[in-house]
Length: 142
Image (tube, rainbow, N blue to C red):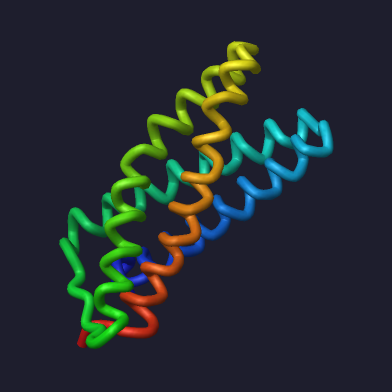
């Protein structure tokens, strides 16, 4: 079995897991459960690193995959893809800064950037799964 064939599905699962961990972490901090929040957010960060590694390996070896959908779905797909890609480029930086500020105990500045990092990161995770579904499941290339 060619390992590259399973990487898109693995990537989608890692994206979904990251999003779930982020939301669970948010719920925990709202409940003032700081320890669990920290573990969940660190887990989301690690899962995202695994995703990025797998994603880069896949696209280094396979290249770009053409979208085969036609009609109204085509501009919808590209709008999602463009917003996903632009915001995804910011997540490693935002997430790292957010994590470092918490690690250093600079919670005021951590909260300020987390207000931006969290929704962007959740959006990127969710749209990553959506892009996978549209590209590999609903409109797979031949």
